Image 1 (cartoon, chains in turn orange, purple):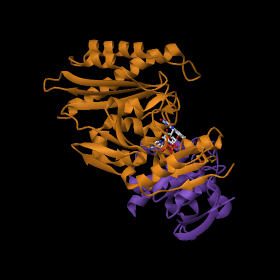
Image 2 (cartoon, rainbow over the protein chains, first blue to last red):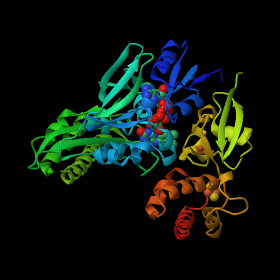
Image 3 (cartoon, protein in one colour):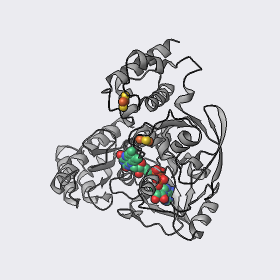
Image 4 (cartoon, chains in turn brown, orange):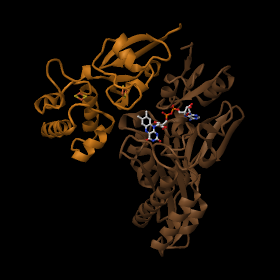
Length: 290
Length: 158
Ligand SMILES: Cc1cc2nc3c(=O)[nH]c(=O)nc-3n(C[C@H](O)[C@H](O)[C@H](O)COP(=O)(O)OP(=O)(O)OC[C@H]3O[C@@H](n4cnc5c(N)ncnc54)[C@H](O)[C@@H]3O)c2cc1C
Ligand code: FES
Ligand code: FES
């Protein structure tokens, strides 16, 4: 392996200067659970690694305007162990909990899960369903983006050279809100999603669904926000008929690949089933919360 | 090739080592520090044989670079027994015959200790989920789970 530089800046400004000033490929290093494996496989050979875990802004979880902002370099286990956050956003935690073993979650970050840009990343559908917004910093300053606009295809993002995702903002939730994420895998742990579905919904005092977002993973080149599936729930009591329409809309939105984990037909069918189960769990959680 | 000079704490002792950027913490532990209790099964985060804790957080040392542990506190299997006195988990693994070839054992012991520090009274299901990242080709897991539950029981009484 050729000579590779490693830097662990303490400020965002220093990290951006390093990433944007490098000649040759520079990579942000968060938990390394994707990057180190790809480096060893020889599929990436960065000339510079910029470890972003020493930057305080990127490693904290804070309440903000009734919602939460967590740093893109917070290890998944810290989010799972954060009781207030887990109670507020159980569906996001459903996704985060599925990222590998306890050991992997001890390092892996949600920022890395998103920026690695795998269509099967487990935290991404529930974050998109949640309406999460990322903070991005780069050589031209700060900007914000809905999570669904970050990944553009397998391994590809809309981040410009030198830009990094710094944080995820989860908005304040109205009363009677619930979210959930389900995935289908042949094994219950340590496997890659064949299909994933995140649903986030809000009921009014009478139990009628007023807002919903539905996002599917692993059924297209990137996580898909499916407004038609959400529309099947809005204005209903999330009864059997609404769930059936949701499942049909979810299946109709899929444009999956065939691979050893599942055929196209299987993925399309299972996407409807996963969306329905996620909606049922989100509903149960919304009813529990006043 | 330029090497990084890294200072960290391993099992309570301050250690210094030199390493190139691409070297894993697992390689550093085994080849530089001669702490060969931590094993390599896969090198890709799948098997858990290389489990250690860094600042109390359970991790696969194969997925960490040596340079990343500057200033951190690492615990490995070598620090588990107090001199000649085995940790209750180690004793229970022997009593329950929870190992055969033993390659997975150091990683499983480190992972199990990390569980019991957070949850002294886990259910069988919680033990199985926590140890899902530790593969064992020999035992079939039942004896491992029994040993962890028995150690937890004993440690709660103390
Ligand atoms: C055994 C094992 C099992 C796994 N199981 C799952 C699973 O079930 N589900 C799942 O979704 N994933 C799984 N993964 C994949 C991986 O753990 C996750 O994708 C993880 O969230 C990646 O985060 P990281 O911090 O380790 O990223 P890194 O490896 O540090 O980075 C990944 C990529 O993102 C870039 N990057 C990281 N942070 C930022 C940032 N803030 N801004 C811009 N770019 C950034 C890096 O430059 C790199 O290109 C598994 C991995 C292993 C090893
Ligand atoms: S050697 Fe690290 S997980 Fe297998
Ligand atoms: S005892 Fe042989 S792998 Fe577990």
